[in-house]
Every structure is written in C-alpha cells, then in structure tokens.
Image (spheres, one colour):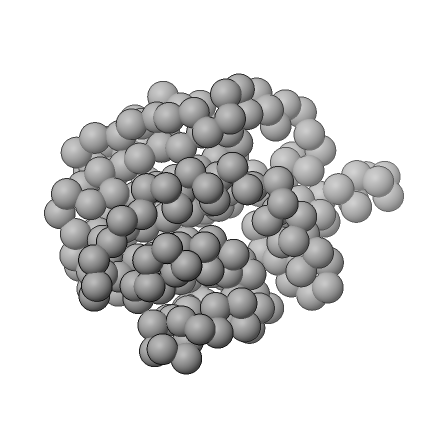
Length: 207
C-alpha cells in the first residue's frame, strides 16, 4: 500500500472514530460540509418540556447544540470516541450547566438505555461504520417511544463514488436498502427524503 493510500485510509478512519488533533480537525470539516444535514434535522425538532433526544455519534456536539438552541430538552448522546466527549461537553456547556446533557461512550449496537425512552433519535453520517446495521437499528427502535422517529442522514452512494477515503470499514447504502433494513429491524415505516438532491438524504424510520 502506498503512502497516499495509507494516508487516505487513516483520514477515513477518523470519520468513524475521531481522535487526537486530526480528529478534531476532521470534525470541524464535517461541521462545515454537513450544514444542510444539521439544518434538516433541526427542522424536524419540535419537542415538549421533559422530552429526551438521543444523537448517535455526537462527535464534537454540533448537532446537539443546534437542537438545544431551538428546543431546550434533555440531550443524550453516544459515541465511540473518548476524545469527542470533552469537546461535545464544552460545546454544550449550557445544557450541561442546566443538568440536561448526558454523553456516553459506547456502541449503538448495545445502547445503555431503557425501552421507550426517547422522543427522537438522530444520526448524521455514522451508519456506514456500524458493525451490524440491523442490530443498531433494532436497538434504536427499542429505545424510541411508540410513534416516534429515528432521523438518519447520509451521503448517497453515488456521491461517494470510488473515493479512497471509504475503501475500508465503510459501508455505502442505497435508499431502498436502508428501507428494507429498517423493516427487518421492526420499524413500522421508513420514508426517504432528499437533503441535497443527488448528494445527501434523510431516512425517517418510525416506530
């Protein structure tokens, strides 16, 4: 493997598990390119006092911060990166001060929450890295309240193309494939919406 291939593989791994200085830089870059995804996710949020929401793969806490500005509800997050927890806590200091920030280190395929806990679950660009997609979706369904939704945002398979950043440990999805996986996980329905046509989309899985 050439040095450039090793470099691109390393950068690709940072998107799945941001760590160190490079991880922080990658997260800032993702905050910039993912802005339409954040905007579309926040647009879905109209919560009541006492509601709890969960973000899968919270990274530096950007999405949680944007949600809290509109809806000062209880913020929960789970991420595999130890380095990101401090960054996310710092960004969401107001929610933390108010006793409304609960960040965990862990795996979405084994969520440490009770059944029927959350009024919404979100995830932006993490599903590519899950070890077991159906198990992860099943866990998310378990912790969602009846009738509530999981907002999953991804870039399209076509947009990724043959990028060397996504060669290892990275699974690309077609929209229909995600709908089928949601059904296997027990969701009542799954709706696909464009975020940026031909580039990114949102799949809304409803329990």
